[in-house]
Image (cartoon, rainbow, N blue to C red; front, side, top):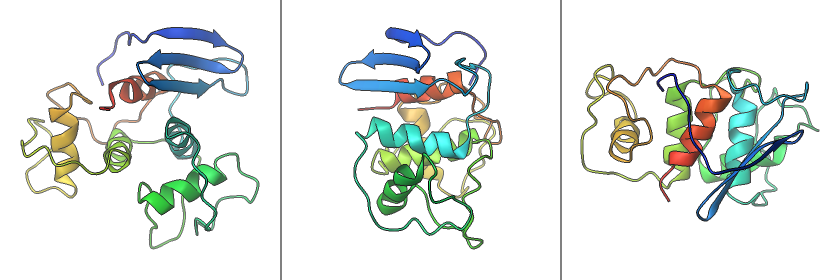
Length: 174
């Protein structure tokens, strides 16, 4: 995403984080442990799944997620169970989730596409840095067609900041 300001209908920024209302959707991003929003801080894989789960209304999922590197009492445990059940997060050969790792734009968009039900816009993307035939190409097609990532160059390996994550959630098609 390009540098700049991302406008939301913001209700409050307080010790609990940023809250915004966008039509039928509420976007809630928690404050960091130091009490700040941290707009330029990279989003962790754990936070990304947790925020999607909250956006979905915190649905109950009781089956094990199966990842070996997630502590039993992790704040995102229920979110990860739900994300695995829904196919938003998939098991890797190593069975590791790597919760503290920063989320790439590619991973965030792929998870948002799965969250949206894997729509096929039937229109090829116009990103100059995503080659034809790449894995999950339809997710890039959807991101471009829906305006989720409105740019010429996608920047797949770029890390997603907290501000960019709010912008992605705000642009997520209904």
